[in-house]
Length: 211
Image: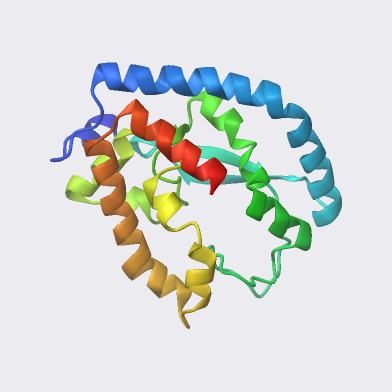
């Protein structure tokens, strides 16, 4: 998938000035965030390493801007179970450790993504970066979602902040995610791109931190 392919659809991405504003905001606050939270990231990494008996950082391939694959960094919150092959996580998932549940609830597991923001793989606000098999298969106008960097938070992330509980209520969570949640997220993210403003980004960040 090329840059021109992802931007040739009906929904345009951000303008040049908007993109520069967004990137400058990301750079400034990623540096600030890492300077303020490096000690917490270090302690959480050590705790997660002991808790999972492995590297405390969870590193996984995700689909980024223009369909480029990058490696997202999060705090590890799960232990592998051979019988579980799904990438969909729901409430009560036996792979999630007690410490991991705490990290997820407090969003400490998201802190290492500040490094992804600094590198330019991600933004503070945008579509959540998905594993290959979803975002890289977008078609038509929907592929405009790949015109911006994926984000740590965003309107779809906030709406589905209780996604794990929602999925747990369905007998087939993968099908429900594929047929209901994912299409809704795509439309919300396209609306976010069409109506982007730095003020809205700041509001999404505030909502994420204080809710």
